[in-house]
Length: 188
Image (cartoon, rainbow, N blue to C red; front, side):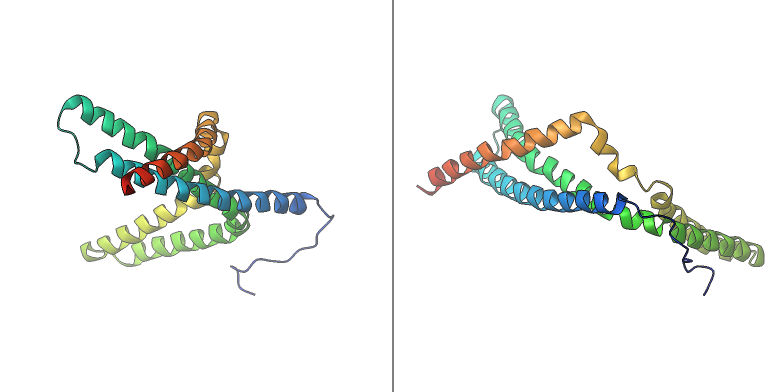
């Protein structure tokens, strides 16, 4: 067994946490699929309505141009918010694996820092600096996920963001109905 492989230990007692976490993750996966469907319907609706708003060209006068831009922004906002929530739910689903890999990743980053320091001491000279700076940059950017594994989940605790998600989910239904009416009007 190498120093980087996880060691197996003795489990002291059974925990109900995996069962509860499994249930929450299955709800998150279902919600993620549902949100993706809503976002796709919203995006298609936004495309139809947006096309109807600018089918004869974008207005040149300031008043109608502002109203057109506002209309396009209003129909595009719900699918964008739902797509953002879909990405956030993906991060939530991947969180247990990320936490499980955290000790192994920490060891690997420590080994990489040690190798980088040894190489910097062994190789001196201007021609090795760009390579060392590149390796340090890659290590720093990959350490961000290691140091903040829970950071992508912070929007779940933001009440205005959650309110925007609920409002966007409800806005997709009238938006899709309007898009059907607009599509019928455009086809006739």
